[in-house]
Image (cartoon, rainbow, N blue to C red; front, side, top):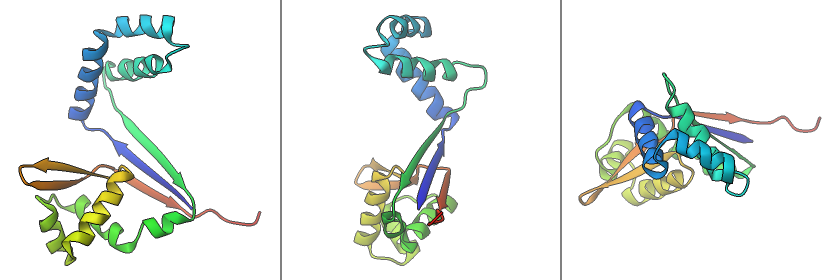
Length: 150
């Protein structure tokens, strides 16, 4: 079994990442120089250069793709977790309590599922005052069941 998780970043996410890299390196030219001179010993300079160059293009876009494999994915992607992801895709929720009520599930079980999905990068939990707000962090999930024996 193969699970592919894809996130397409929003314009705001792109601008924040671009600004983060500019705050660290100053400019694309400065980073290019570091990547060229120190890139062999510090490959993160080359990676950051490629990202910043793409983000400073006329129409920047950014996608993140993660692939997970193994038979344990069936156990991880339970029907309840898939329902939870589907609900977050369709509706914005203001708290875990609200999500648990909407799904007609126990708060602790929903929280545990959210924490597991957060570890896989599928969900983000943002703290606001005394609440944690769950938000879907992916735009696409593909599940592939590989054929055996050939």
